[in-house]
Image 1 (cartoon, rainbow, N blue to C red):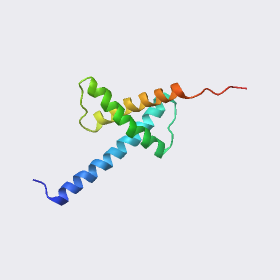
Image 2 (image 1 turned 60 degrees about the vertical axis):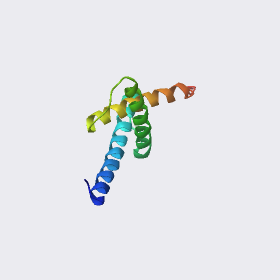
Image 3 (image 1 turned 90 degrees about the horizontal axis):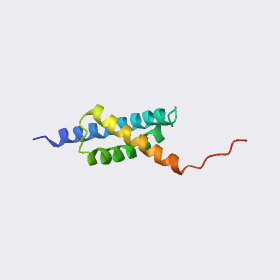
Image 4 (image 1 turned 135 degrees about the vertical axis):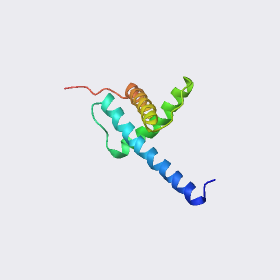
Length: 96
């Protein structure tokens, strides 16, 4: 059994890595789809939403992500899908 202090440290570490993975996944998705990142806050938001989408997609396929690399891959795939969906609704600007 973990003590309350050990559980707090494990939970804090989990949140820390979730934020790091979210930022990295958002940045990677930006690199893949746009050729550049979006800034730390937008990368974080895109990465976190991408993690939800990626886990849903991989869950439908019967896969479960365990570990840092698998979570990064899942989040990045989800973030790329998110950016693709956003690009479908984004209006094209007229070049002059």
